[in-house]
Amino acid sequence: MRYLLCFSYDGTDFYGYAKQVNTLTIQGEVEDKLSLIFNEEIKINASGRTDKGVHAYNQYAHFNSDKEINVEKLTYSLNKLLNKGIFVKYVKTVDNDFHSRFNAKCKIYEYKIKVNNYLPFERNYVYFFKNLNLNKIEEASKLFIGEHSFKNFTSKPDDENNFVRNIFDIKIIHEGDYCFLDFLGNGFMRYEIRKIVGSLIAYATDKTDLKTLKEYLDKSERNIINFQAPSQGLYLKDVIYK
Image (cartoon, rainbow, N blue to C red; front, side):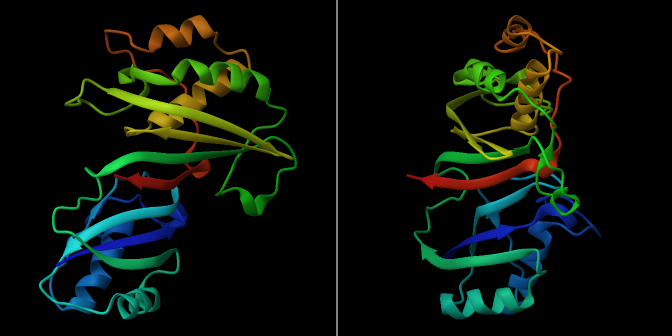
């Protein structure tokens, strides 16, 4: 039987999503509590990994077990046992050929920037950047929409698709002191969004120009861009499945 989890997390106190030895991670914590409940070793497969300090509104992961457990009771039990930085929204059964990663049609990430009025208790949840030119952010964002090779906007050493990804849209929303950048795409590689956001901020602060950013995009040789926004402003917002 295959189960699907939908859960959210505050990534502040975790050393990223992927399981590591003797380190608190999202995957390690969820697998540990599932294994305890099912009384067998459980391995989960997520829609994707997030780095240290990155958060999630809706992360998805599936796992298999021959045991049949009431999904409402499983949801309740997990939330009683899990680190309080993780909350399971629901568990449901899915077809055995469903895959949390490979069945994803679109992933949505959000990056939060605050441009005024720094508050210390927000420091782990937004990137504070005073007096940022949001019009220039919007102007430069159009460069990245569409299918491109993002080999210079990721730390990933190699890629079976030659680093080509399709960003369907970048939506920019201004609300008071906050700027929300929503990235919709068929998949994102490690640091890709943070490097794009860092590049947008660099352009908005006159540290680079559009011509230079365009040269890094779709460039045949590997020359990874140095601009990179910090992790605390990034959220996995949702995953859309076929």
